[in-house]
Length: 436
Ligand code: ZN
Image 1: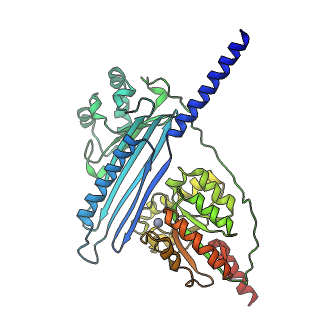
Image 2 (image 1 turned 120 degrees about the vertical axis):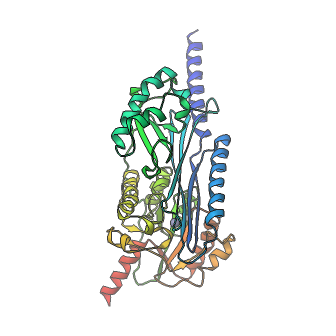
Image 3 (image 1 turned 30 degrees about the vertical axis):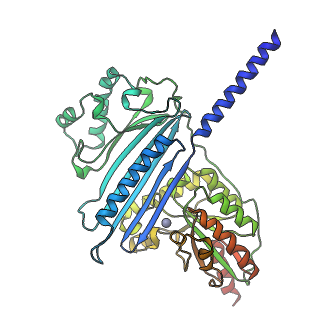
C-alpha cells in the first residue's frame, strides 16, 4: 500500500515537473529585428516572437501595417533635406509562467512633422487558456469602480499640466472600454493612453502604474513579487595571447544579441577569434544568457543604444538616457561595463561627442550583410580586401552572417590575421606606437 502512495506521489511530482517544463518551452523568447538605413530614411524595428501563433500573428500584422503605412508616407523622400525615422520598440514580460504581456511602441519622426507620432499597442495573452485578456478578465466591475479614483489621482500627480479633474471624470468613467491598453507584471498593473485619448497630444503617451497588492484580482494564480532581478558577474573563460606586431582585425556585430549570436560565438571560438558585439539594451534584457556567453567567450560588449533610435536626432537628455539605460542593463546582466559606443546608423554629431565618455567606434569595412543575401558574396567583401587594423561591420541578426563568418575566419587565419576586439585593437596600436 505504502509503495503505491510513494509511487503515486513520485509520479505526480514527475508529471508536475513535466508540465512546468512543457509550459515554459511553449513560450519562446525571440526578437525579430529589421534595421534599414536608406540615405535620409531610417527604420529600426524590434518586436517579440513568442512561438504562440495567435499572439505572434497579431503582433506581426500590426508591425507590417505600421511599416507599410510608413513606407507609403515617407518611403520616397522628396528632397535631400528631408529625413524620416520609424522606430518600433517593445516591452515583454511573462508573469507566473503563462501570462504574456507585450507592449509595442511606435515612434515616427520626420522633418515634415511638427511633432513625432507616438502610439502604443498592448497584448495580454493567457497561454494556458489560449486567449487574449482584457482588463475585465483581471478585475470585477466593482473593483474597477474602486480603482478609478486611484488612477485619476495618480494621473493628476504624474501629469499636473495635462488634466483637469473634470476632464478625467468625464473621460475615465469606470467602464472597461475606457481602459483598453494595459499590461501587468508580478508587481504592478500598467495602464496606457495614447496621445489625444485622454489628454492633449503634446502630453505624449500617458502611462501609470498601480501596485497589484492594492487590487483585488479575479485571476488567482498570479504569484506576486517573484520576478526578483538577479545580478550577475561573469568572467572570461579563455585567455589568448595577442602579438601586437602581427596583423589583426576587429570584427564587430551590431543590433544583437539575438538567436544567431551563440552560433557566431561557437564559430569564433573554433578559430581562436574574438569580436565586439554592439548590443541593444532592450535585446540584452531578452537574450540575457547569450550576453553572458559573449563575455565568457572572451569577446567584448559595446553599447549600441537602448532601442536603436536615431541618436543624432535626439536631445542630449534622451541620448544620455539611451546610453545609460544600456550601460546599466549590461552591467546588471553580465557584470561588465561597456567602454565603447557605436552610434546607430553610424551617424555621429556634437551632441553625441559631448555627452559620452565612451569611445566612439565606427568601421571601415562594411560587409552589407543586412542587404546581401548570399553568404559567399558577404565573405568576398572581406576576404582579400581587409588590411591590418581594419574594423569590419557585420550584424548578428541574420543566419547568412553566421555562414559568411564560417567562410571568412579560416581564410583570413591562413593569411595570418588575428581576430581581436576593438579595445584590444586600440591597445595593440598603442603598444606599437611605444615601440616605434
Ligand atoms: Zn544598428
